[in-house]
Length: 153
Image 1 (spheres, rainbow, N blue to C red):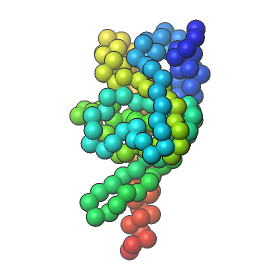
Image 2 (image 1 turned 45 degrees about the vertical axis):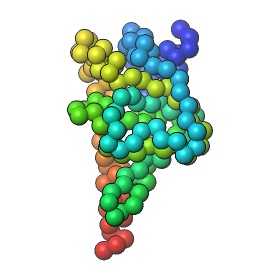
Image 3 (image 1 turned 45 degrees about the horizontal axis):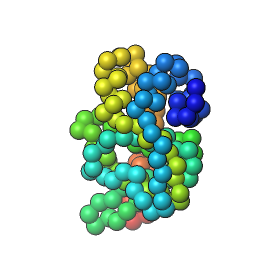
């Protein structure tokens, strides 16, 4: 095993996953990089991929009319960026911006959704891994918003 498949195998998000699934996932993956200030994803845009962070830090931000931008989480190596690709209408619900040079593995969402439809065991394995991340991000955003609104009241 070498290259992208090895990187996926060693990434904490996919720790302990069946090697056959690693092979399927790696067929949807490529290495990518982002410069400081560059967006990995933007609220409202189509959710066409997700990222396994290898190097650098990324901030997750929410913004709304008259409220400005609120950072609700900072992520680093070993973490995952992007969960909205799993749920229709497949649109990002927040922004993710590189704070510094970011190296990541980009995984094509359509490719992985197609493989998950063909192999429901793969789909279930992915859901078990993504749902805790989704819940944790929702909780982090909730706490940040409570803090922001609490400071105003």
